[in-house]
Amino acid sequence: MPGDDKKAKARAREVNELSLKHHLSHALAACNSILKKESPSLRDDLLIDLDKRMRAALQGKTAYAHLIKEKAEICSAFENLQIYVGYLKSAKQSGYTVYEGGKLVIYLPEGLLEKAVSKGSYQDPVKELRKLMAHELGHAILHTKDIMRIKAAVGGELVKDGKAGSALLKDEKESEAKVFGTTLLDLRHKRNMQMIKDGTLVKFF
Ligand SMILES: [Zn+2]
Image (tube, rainbow, N blue to C red):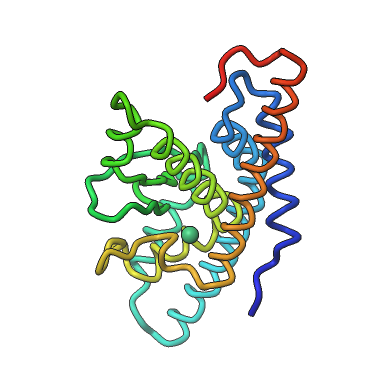
């Protein structure tokens, strides 16, 4: 099934617009304000889903204590659902997004960060980190419910054979995150170029 590219592009435009309003153009802050706004409906969708699973467990007379725990976790997570960024030591140069401890966490490879801040060879790692971050932000706000449901499906055992959270999403979600990431970076690049032209961009790298 192809991904919804139109939705991914519209999302990237929305984040770009919002990030312009945030000082220093933080797309992460923009995504968090979108999540805050959409939290009530995301929470309700997940709770409806959970109620269905509870009813099925009651009818089938199977254990449901873990579902009650999950419901409490969802309610408390949505009091202040936010995206955080962490760095992990990993041989792979890829990122992923998980739902853990009531938070959405984007993990990026620590090795790339070290290269990005060390002198001499920072240009490509910086670009690569930005690309990974834009892609994972796409997962975090396009696929929030899916990422939170994956935790339920695998019982909290997220990291398995190097796959975790966003890495477990289906192909169409992967293509949506790609479209979101490239659209967001493209919009930011165009804005930066315009600011260079206008002479309003003081620091650009
Ligand atoms: Zn992805």
